[in-house]
View 1 (cartoon, one colour):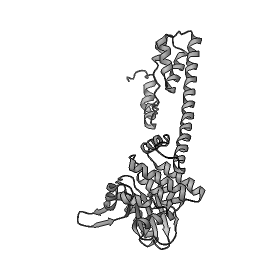
View 2 (cartoon, rainbow, N blue to C red):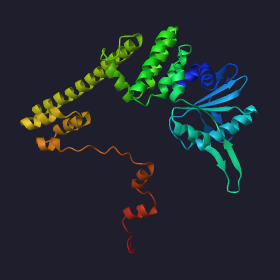
View 3 (cartoon, one colour):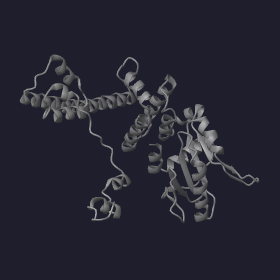
Length: 331
C-alpha cells in the first residue's frame, strides 16, 4: 500500500524525505519503469523507480523485513542504472524496524578474499519513535499514512493513538475529498489484523472513542466489513445446507435409514468436499457405514516423466515380450 501511494503521488517521497532529513530531493519526480534489465535474461524489480531532474534516478524499497536476496539485487540494479544513466542516483530504504534499518545499511557491503571491497550504503528512512510523531503534522496531513504504516504491526495503546490521530488529520486537513477518502482507505488497508481487531473493539464502544469524523469512519468501515463477512458466511452456510439436504434426499431414495447419531453427524459436517463424497457414495452404497467410509480420491497429478514411465513400452523388448516365440527358438 505504501508503494502504491508513492507511485500514485511521487511528491509524497519528497515530503517524507524533507520532513525526516531536512534535505530536498530536488525538483519534481516522475515514476518510470521499475524493471532493471540486463543483457542476459535477468531482471531486478525494485519497489519503485523514480526520476528527478536534479537528483537523477531514485530507487525506493519499502522494507518490512530482512531479505538476504537484496545483497545481490541492490548492487545489480544500481550497477545497471549507473551504466544506463551515466550517473549515480539514490537508493532509499523505508522501514519501521531498527533491526532492518541496521541490516539495510550493510547488507550490500561485499569483500573478496584478497581484500577487494564493494560497498553500497543506501539512505535509510527509519520511521520509529519521535520521527513517527513528527509525521502527524497538521501542515502535512498527507504524511499521516506513513505514521500509520510505521505502527501497522502493533496493537498497543500508543499505536492505536497514532492510527486514530492519522485518521483525524486525514479527515480534518485533507480538503480534497477523493484524496481524503483514498488516504483513509489506505490507512485502514495497511493495518494488521491485530490492530484492526483492537480498533474494532473501540469503534463499537462509543464510550471509549467519542464520535468524531475519524471514529465515525472507523465505525462505518467495521460495520460494512461485518455485513460483507456476514453475507459470505451466509452464502457458504447456504451452500453447505443444500448439500446436506441433497445427501438426505439420496439416502431416502435409496431406502437407507439413518440413526439419530448418523443424522447428527451429517448435520455437524461443514466441509463441502466431504458432503460431496458422501453424496457420490450414497448413490451405490449398501449401508451407511459404506457412505461414511468413503475416502477422498487422490488429486495428485502425475508428472510427465511418471506418465511416460507408465506408458506401454513400444521398443523391441516390449514387442518381443508380446510376440509368440518362433518355433525352434527359446526365449
